[in-house]
Image (cartoon, rainbow, N blue to C red; front, side, top):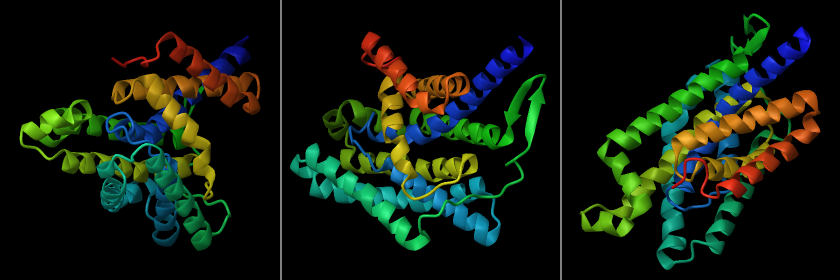
Length: 291
């Protein structure tokens, strides 16, 4: 009985910490898809790009991967701003942002993967840090630092983004453009500029999310495909554009996957987790925190 309770408790802990990672990889989708209605399916590809940036800084210069990701964030922000500008002029301005825009982001995902393969090959890459390996213990519960440290970094990023969106003028404009771009234009603001900033922020988050990914597990160029379904499912389940909903949905998914992997095997984990998501959405299609 003690072993079963300990196993159950550790599965809950692992799922909770894994949910923090899922929140980090999904928060950008909550902005781009939930607020701007841009289905950026290339988002996981940029996360893997962030993983390789953290790996290069760690292996070449010995920089902590999480610190490296923060240093690289401005570059990812500029990359996101450039991508949105291209997307706007090629698709959104002409009203072709649905199917053709989706094909555009699929192409970006493919280009990112192929570029990483050509430069770094297909071998798995990993990083070194003092918190990869050790664990903290609370009775029978184990808190692996390689999950706990990324969990805290993820919550910090989500919290800072929420403060920026809710307290700053530009942040409130981003929330406004998600609801009524025309009203924002009447008030003298430029919706295109606001959306460019918001989309750039969504891509900037992939820098830290990528570092968290490579801290948790080794990565290779195509690993981002494993998270395409998860990030959109979490964003929808939490309620499009809701940061609180994203975190809660991510943690629920993490716990469901961890419990399933622990007691039934890893192969059942995705099926059970997504079955739970579908059931939840059948009860509340707008998501847990959706309007």
